[in-house]
Length: 75
Image (cartoon, rainbow, N blue to C red; front, side, top):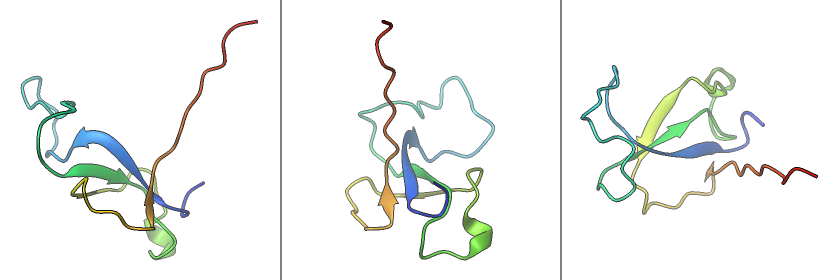
């Protein structure tokens, strides 16, 4: 999956370390959101899930995407 698209995260782009009062997980707070990993336009070294950068959530680029997760119900 690495290198296909950079993955949007819901976290606001805030510097580390994480603080309890930094409000980085607020869904309604304005600000740039975190993108993780590299995409097909980046160099091979950038295809790393630990790399973070950010962008405005209103900006739509074909190399930014999301990873969908589904937990199936127990049988």
